[in-house]
Length: 135
Image (cartoon, rainbow, N blue to C red):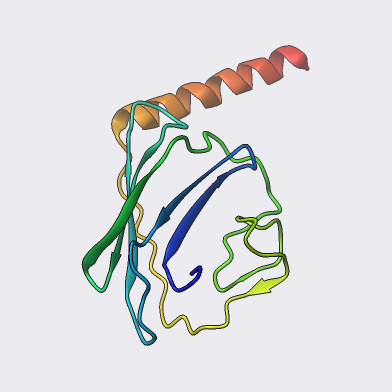
C-alpha cells in the first residue's frame, strides 16, 4: 500500500524496478487484493504482465520487464507483513512493519511452460559443467 493505493513492486536485485499500482485508492476496510502475473515465457528471466484486482474488480496493470533467472541469495526470504532484510522498495526503511491487518495470504504458482523448464535444466547443466571445469 502506498498513499491508499495497492502496489506490487518488483525489484530485480536492485538493477531495475517495476511497479503495478491500482488506479484508485482503496476505501478503508477489508479487501481482497490479487496480483495475477502472466509470464511471457520463452525461457528464464523474461518479463510479464501484472494485473491487480481489488475485490474481484480489475484495478490496474503494468509490465515487469525482466525477472530473475536464478536464485541469488540464501539470506533473503519471503517476508509477509514485515521486512527485516533488504527493502524491496525505496519507499520505506527496514525494519518495516505493515500496520494494517492481513487476514490471509495465498500464493498460487501456475505450472511452468515446458520450454521454461527445459531452459532451467539447460542452465543448471551449463553451470555444473562450468564448475567442474573450474575445479
